[in-house]
Length: 187
Image 1 (cartoon, rainbow, N blue to C red):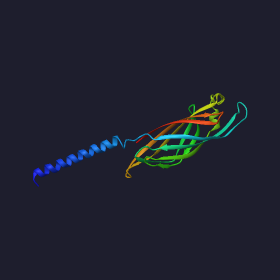
Image 2: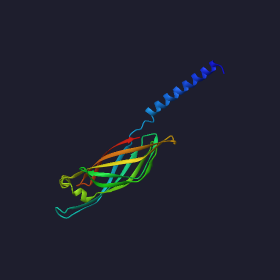
Image 3: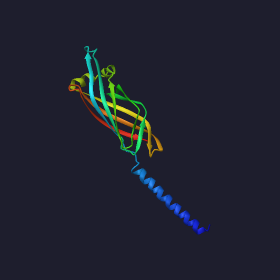
Image 4: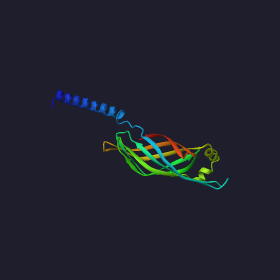
C-alpha cells in the first residue's frame, strides 16, 4: 500500500474518531446527564391516634400511611434494593419506614405504598413534643438513601445512590399532613 492511501485512511479514521468523541461528549453532557429524581410523599392518612395516661406518663401511638411517588426523568432505569427511611423529630429518630426494592423505569414513574409507625416512647422523650402538639403541628423530617444500579441503553450499568429528604408537618387537630421533598442522585 502506498503512503498516500495510508495517509488518507488514517485521516478519515481520525476524523471519524474525533466526531465520535464529540458526539459521546455532547450526549453525556446533555441527554444522558443524570437528572435529579422527583420524589413526592403523599400522606394518605394519620391513623390509630391514641393517647392515654396523664403527665408524666402520657402515651401516644400513631400510624402515618403514605404513598411515595418516584418520577425518574432520566434515560436510564434505576433498580434499588430494600431500604429503610428514618423519620426524625428534632434530631431524634422516631419512626422507621420500610421501602421495598423496585425498578423505576427510564423516564417513568412508580408509586410505593408504605407506612410509618411512630415510636411513641422516643417521640415523647423530647421536651418539645407536648408544646408542639398543643400548638397544633408536629414537624418531622424523613431521610431515605436508595442504593442500586442505573442501567442505560440496556447494557451500561452504574452504581448509584438516590438520597431523599422530606419535611412533614402533621396537623394534630385536623389530622392532615403536608410534605415537601428534595432528592439527589450520585453515581
